Length: 110
Image (cartoon, rainbow, N blue to C red; front, top):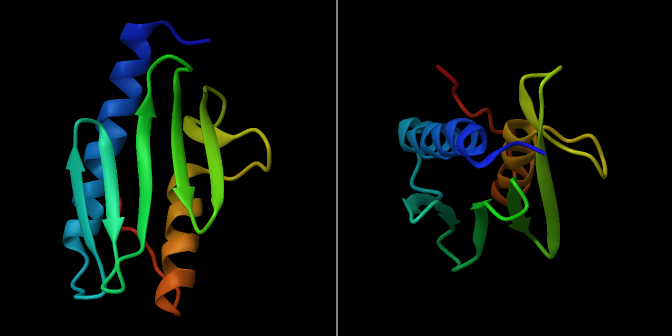
């Protein structure tokens, strides 16, 4: 398990990078907002997907369409990975948002 300082150094920047990636998308199909380490992606129909920092577990959690992911930091992959199914955070989020929108979505990374 990551110590708190390392967790924050890895988790908080990725949440900021995700909201910036959504902000760079030229679309009226969704709105993304980051507040108190909680990224909310909201769609015109009122549906919300949530990605948040879960400090106690040292994980990033995502909830979308009645499903949940708990991402752990994987040093080998240098990525947040869901041990349950092997999903990587960025890919999983792009996939579920794209599915909701009805077309493939790629989140731009720096």
